[in-house]
Length: 442
Image (cartoon, rainbow, N blue to C red; front, side, top):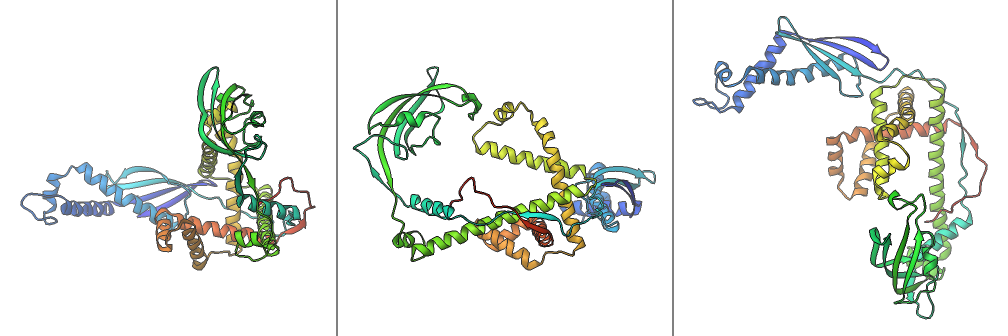
């Protein structure tokens, strides 16, 4: 077999692979030997029927089909190895007959990664977000732990107030008709304006156990699902039970109750360490994003269409998952934005291009800097995945090997190491501190 290469463009080549008539005859002979083992031919034990007898029981088209199925992938793999190609997608294959139909020419159009000419990547200017944890955030996390450990006591002497925990029945109607999602029985929830349609919680204030009340509200114009947006609904509400959370005191006994620590000071210190780790991780991720953004902005390179299309499909799939998790219909999501799936996909293409370019640049830098992944590093990642999934390391690794996930895992580790290298070599300035808009809680 011989293979010649023609470059069609920076991300696509064409391989002309010549398969001789003798190689093709040998492939056909292997098919006949295999068929002889599989066929049950009267008068012959499996595998002992001569070829001319097998030929009488098998259509020539079947032999040719199986021969091509065997030899084409083999010839293609050899051609890739010969020309040191690393395809990014399955090739487009065209088969042509030669030598009066006895030989074969395989024309394979192959998408490849472009050659990357790296510009400056050492000393990139990035900013480091502040990682100081305000004492208020520690207080908020401690209060969150106290709320989780709260006990709930029934309230009989007063009506419902904000922050109470109520058990209630409700049934909602729009234009006199019950609607999907508007009815519940023995539903327990906290009375909070954030948990209800605007105006609903306030109209519950003062309700006593076993009291029934009619509440009328209007769904916000931006409400999801859209079929309820802007509609006015009437709810029949019956409160069965009202409870108030009683938080434990923030003392050493509480610390021992919620942790293996013995004092409140030790618990606060552990909360601070955890919040600082979280802030440090966020800062590192932000700096890595800045590095990638700087690389993408300063480099120009052709991108394989197939990689960009696949990345756009992944982004679209991620959005669909988020929409499904929010219990919103995909059609409602698109209609609310006056889009079709195709227009949304097109809108995602620039982001997909940036992501693909970033990956290619990181890979090129890893190669230039000889950043590689050891077997020990891969095994540590496999062990972490096994622990998270509750499966054995052996089972987890076997699953990854079968699905091709092991190479993806190695690629992810390599990218992480390369980004860490670039951040270490960057020119980092401390970003000015800012008051947090939302407290971080445990």
